[in-house]
Length: 269
Image (cartoon, rainbow, N blue to C red; front, side, top):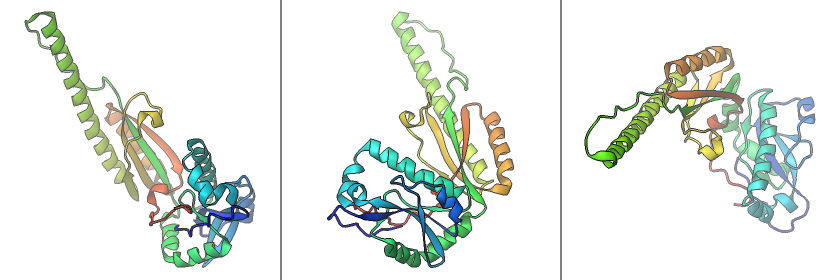
């Protein structure tokens, strides 16, 4: 949700960090959830919707502080984890619309105003997500799972033989990558056909995925809870059908991939 900029000065008092919007939430659920600043989250109700927020001291979450902290990867990771923990806890109880990271309002009245202004969008999204979960399927290249290119004998000595081996290796690698890419497209199409909605995100870098081989599929699928068993069975079947890929099913996740992302801005922007 778009937020009004929090003034840079004075850096005292608290703003309101928006974690998510839900249709309703029991007080007992919120009592066990810690917000961005390490304090319990609370509900702000407006226009028939509930914003789950946390008080955010401006000394750390005000305009200038956020501008500085969002350049600090360590701080950013901690904030993202704390923010996601709230969204994830809410998602376990029902449909949730996650807020963009670092959406900060001046006070509760501004939050209520935002809920009223975007009621139709928020209510429609919550209705669409009800009874559904996001599941991820990642596909990684399996080296050696495709036939090797034959190395043909020939003359020319050791140097020529080396060049032939290198050409054969490169050809095999390119063919393996092509087959894996085709397999990833086929897997995504099959899974999308058994989901309410699907998104294919850019593959993650190995430094982020932690996998020893390249990721060729990074799919997200919105699945009816009633159809989860069939979806999981299909993912296992596709893994057997495509030995060139190692498929990994993850979830359930809050439906980050299926929430409309308006022109939201961080408070400091």
